[in-house]
Image (cartoon, rainbow, N blue to C red; front, side, top):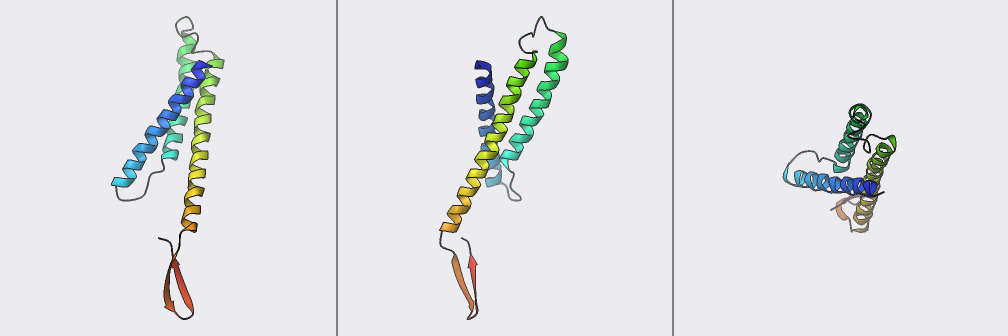
Length: 124
């Protein structure tokens, strides 16, 4: 259980680092924005595949040295931590996006009177 919690906390720390780095990159670089959650998901999935290769190919050959890391139960514990972190990242992104869009809708929209028959509503 302690290994699972350590894996989960380390994945959340990696998520925070990636979100901060992508936020800084988006703020200081012109052009299209990078979605930090997608970058984190790609990194976590790559780590998952690398972990599977290490567990079942490398550590499996050296059972006497890496016995507790090469068991399928240890791998599934780490895999669960990866997947929980990815799901939490996407859920957090979804909630933040809904909150941001609700805030934009709540703000007053700028109304430009272009003619007596039409009005343009612009979000600020």
